[in-house]
Image (cartoon, rainbow, N blue to C red; front, side, top):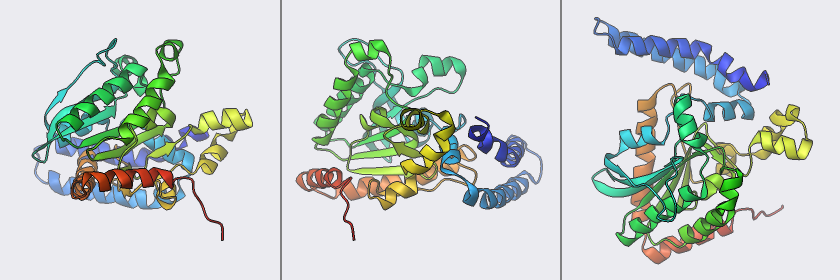
Amino acid sequence: MAQQKDFYQREKNIIRLKEKIDAFMSSEADGAEEKIAENRKKIALEWAKLAPTLTPLQTVQIARHPQRPYTLDYLGALTEDFMEIHGDRRSEDDPAIVAGLGFYRGRSVAFIGHQKGRTTRQRIARNFGQPNPEGYRKALRVMKMAEKFGLPIVTLIDTPGAYPGIQAEEHGQAEAIAYNLREISKLKVPVVNIVIGEGGSGGALAIGVGDAILMLENSFYSVISPEGCAAILWKDQGAVPQAAENLKFLAQDLLELGIIEKIIPEPPGGAHIDFDTTFKNVDKHLNATLKRLEMMDEEERREHRYRKFRKIGVFTEK
């Protein structure tokens, strides 16, 4: 367990510098801007030494960092007049998934994303970002609404996985995920998926089918968590670092395997160190991706989506 906490120990110098930046940003003293720029350079130097030594498990810790920006943070920064839509019109609302419509760069876009919660109270209310079937049905409801009005869809993925509780299973968890996979694959409008933190199993995939998958630099996207993999294959939590190494679920791995299209760079230290730079980077790549997809006609885009998923897992040995 000590190794799992290692990144948080190693980032202490960066956190101290960030705290100084935050203090200068709230200060009106002369020279505050120069001090902010100076400390940002120091963070960059610290990160340049730290980043090359990070293990896959430590990158997982960055993806799970409690101070990373979550879906509602992105919506607040990237959209105007976001209107959240609640409920699946069958039984209830699921706070673990945020879904609705907002203006993005002057056009209406449907946004769907996992929300973990920042405080302990919020995390409990959001079920730690683990959706129930009602959440996936709500997500699909909003996607179908977007398709009806010809609006592009953007999903923000950040979940440890679908909720594995008894009630979720009784309400049809597996069916809800499988149904979403089928229905999203047939949507006529552009669909962009962005992994902003954890991309865990079917919990992520249920809103992760689309024309393009983008990942933040320090996120991961996997069929199972390293802890779950170690428990099943090794029956030993001491094997978690080995599982993280073998799963090949980091952004660079998945880019090389052709599963994702683009890696969105994070600021030095990770997304939690500089929200504004993270939002600007996501905005830049999301806008470019939407423009590219909107230039394709409907049939071409759906065929591209089909081919994209058909080739995943296909390898040629030399």
